[in-house]
Amino acid sequence: NAGVTQTPKFRILKIGQSMTLQCAQDMNHNYMYWYRQDPGMGLKLIYYSVGAGITDKGEVPNGYNVSRSTTEDFPLRLELAAPSQTSVYFCASRLGQGARNTEAFFGQGTRLTVV
Amino acid sequence: AQSVSQHNHHVILSEAASLELGCNYSYGGTVNLFWYVQYPGQHLQLLLKYFSGDPLVKGIKGFEAEFIKSKFSFNLRKPSVQWSDTAEYFCAQGAGSYQLTFGKGTKLSVIP
Image (tube, rainbow over all chains, first blue to last red; front, top):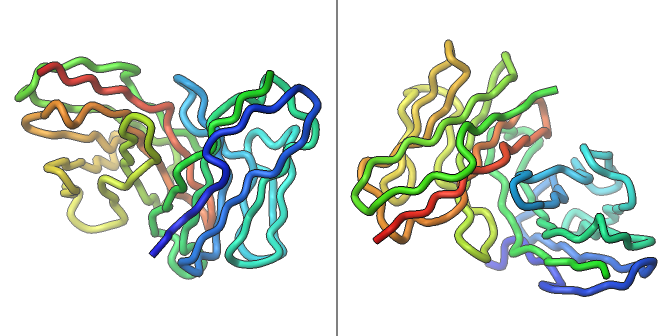
C-alpha cells in the first residue's frame, strides 16, 4: 500500500526554469492538496482538487499551476522558478466527499531550492 | 476565513516532563480537528482526531487532546515525554467540504 507518492524528493532549479512535481495516490481519494512548508510558517495551501477535472486556488497559488486528469494524479507545475519558491512541498490526499471528517495522508515531500 | 493558532513556537522539555501544546481554532460551526506530528526530515503523520462525542480524544504514542468548544481550543497533552517525541506538531482544522487549515506548528525538543 503505497499511499501518497511524491517525486522527486530533492531538486535544485535555476531561476526561470520550469518543473513539475509529481504526486500520485492509490487510495481512491477524492480530495488532493498541495501545500508548501516554510520554516515557522506552517503549511500554506497552494492548490486543491475535489475530484478529477476540478481544481481551485488555495492561499498562495501565484507562480504555480495544477491539473487533475485522473483521480490518482495531481501534478504541480512551476513555470518560471523564483527564489521565493524555495520550500518543501507536500502533497496530501483525503477521502473527502461524503466523508469530510477524514484525515489527510501526506507524501514524503519535495525539497526544492531555486538558485 | 478560518484560522488555527498555536501558542508556542518552540517548547523545550526534559524527558519525563508533562507536555501541553495549545491550539485555538476560529471556525464556529461543525469542526473536525486534528493533530499531526512531523519527525525531523519526515512527512506529517496523524496523531489523533476529533469529530464528535467524547471531548477527550486519545491518540497514538500516549498523546491525548481535549476539545473545549467554549474556548475554541484543542490542546494536545502527554503526561511524560520521551526523547523520541522530539518533532514538530501541527494542529489542523477541517471545515466545509474540503478545507483543511493548519497552524504554524510547535517545535518540541526533548532533552535526555
